[in-house]
Length: 130
Image (cartoon, rainbow, N blue to C red; front, side, top):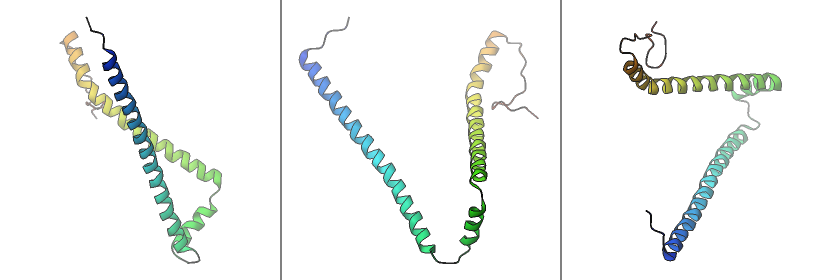
């Protein structure tokens, strides 16, 4: 049976929890400020690079002309396609890693249930053996 905490113990625990809450809030604010500060820093460097090229004729003009000739819908389609490809690649890698992590456990359980069971020949990552 658990013993009840005294009032002094409850007050001390309450103070510790409040202090931990304040610390967590401060850490969250600092983390967010650092993240936003990094974005501002990156934006300032991008601005400086564009400002340095203003009025200059460089090799970057060709890239800017190509970008200027693109329609917004075409650019959006390419962006959606690139995002879809990236997501698919990431999802495939995560799925194969999960299959590899869980395959040994599943094989052991199947061997316990039926020791004469034959293998499908799949690799530990779930790929076909060919």
